[in-house]
Image (cartoon, rainbow, N blue to C red; front, side):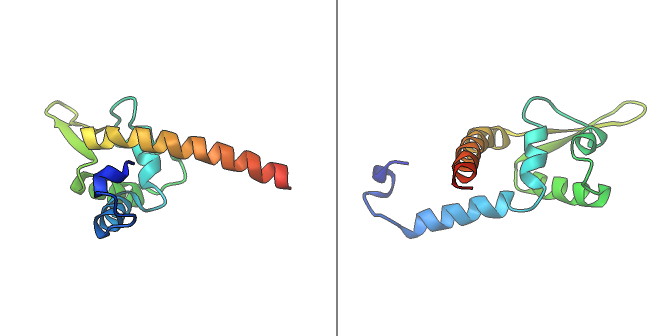
Length: 118
């Protein structure tokens, strides 16, 4: 991030507030995992649950509702028999891919450093 964004101020209030806003949206054991399940295609509830077998249906439902409220994904209901419901990422949700890719790169690098220390 460029210092120009904050006019050269090293740790402005806006920086901290923006970070807190970001964390409020994605904090939780399952939110980022759910988002990563949807990076490449829309999925039904059962499809997400197959990718995350440890999550309970109740917790998945709760996390999906929170992600929808925060504008990260949308729930689409298709009028057919039986009713088809799919979840897909919004543009804000897709924008998280760059952030998560950087986190994965950092995690792999950090893991290698920790193995070397051991």
